[in-house]
Length: 180
Image (cartoon, rainbow, N blue to C red; front, side, top):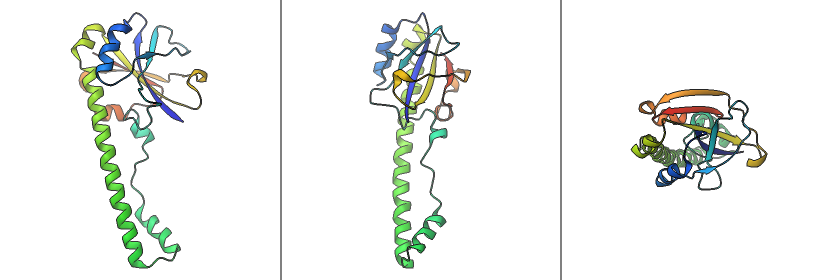
């Protein structure tokens, strides 16, 4: 299952003017038409510049696979393999170090992506073109063209309240309008 992030605007937005602003922040702005029931007055734009947005800060709280291992269970697994106590200690120490390195890299990536989104949403050029912009992500079970998105909930947020925790707490198929 791959995650894709979308920017959402109202029907009468000028995409060519916004595309330049979006690209300045390393995001894509390719219009993608979906059949979203009850949302005929919106336009959706795919933001990925790669194959997908897997690992994105958007919705990280709900897709986070970086939680720390249960070290006592890890120890029991190694004991069942009949490793010596010293070898178990060394293996656990190595796994903890690997986890710490991986976790610190993920935190750095989250902070960088969150900063990019925040700076984009606070860009004065964007504010002069739009009153609000939406953020939505969806995990696709198949090809983009065959997927149907059902927006579950709409939320209105002020740009001043947008931070890393906001991005991490966005739920899948939840349309978050950001008042610029």
